[in-house]
Image 1 (cartoon, rainbow, N blue to C red):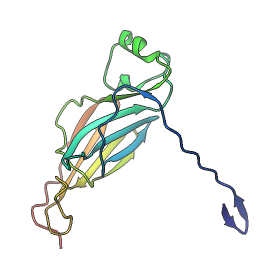
Image 2 (image 1 turned 90 degrees about the vertical axis):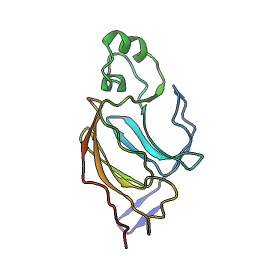
Image 3 (image 1 turned 180 degrees about the horizontal axis):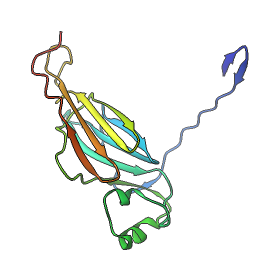
Amino acid sequence: MIDNPSHRVAVTLEQQVVEAAGTPPSPRHNHTGDIIDNRLYIFGGGDENQEALNDLHVLDLRASRASHCTWLDVCGTTSHQRDRLGNQATMRWEQVTVHGEVPPARLYHCSAVVGRHLYIFGGAPDSKTTLVSDPVLNDMWRLDTRASLLLLSRRGMLSETLT
């Protein structure tokens, strides 16, 4: 309950397991998740063996129909493929094949969405990085989600440790 003298709002949260077709991302931690155009983008993080990842997965959050734009349009599939795959009435996980240079594996990074672009900044190259005494990543990447092109905007790598 939000208790404000001028507003009182009761908030009820409900949790449920979401059914989705396709192969979901592997278990991970310290990754980012961003929503663009009803699609959830999961990038990087660390896996069960504490190794950094640089894969990109997308979950279309709508029960898709062929008449709507689906994530498949992002990767440039043909209309025949889109009609065949887009008629599924469930959400679907896909690992995105990105064309162009791909960011190095990372975890503890941050992300932001501006329009149709997903920005990834910084992070640590592995789970052994202490974030206090070890070098961290200082680069920025931009993904155009409509073109499925990862465009690099380099700020370089921070070679010295942060104090």
